[in-house]
Image 1 (cartoon, helix red, strand yellow):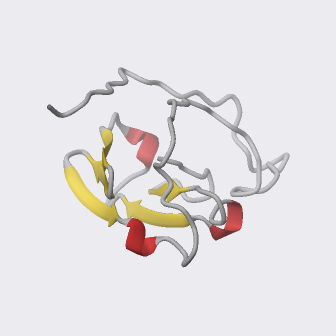
Image 2 (cartoon, rainbow, N blue to C red):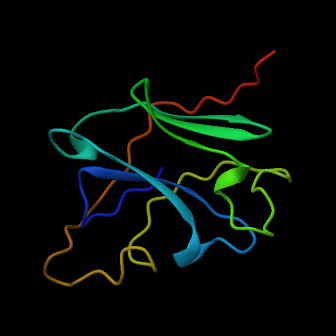
Length: 120
């Protein structure tokens, strides 16, 4: 889940892999019908299986990606080990450089919990 300050009501769930990262990544978006992402706590989930990944927000499925979505000749992203990153970033390629007068500081990211589990 990624959120860009210029799009306060939209989250992006993005696959980054060899040959489809950065500006060529495979992205699915979810826009909250009312309010901003940060107006309340939300539950973001990814169900990851060998040949599919499903993205949810607050229990609602909004995107499913499979190897058929990957560019021809490229590898499915999940063919190697992973780790979890929680990050509050300012600037970067997705959002661009912060503007001195229209970027609100300080910012914070509140996380109630992170859960990782395997289906048996």
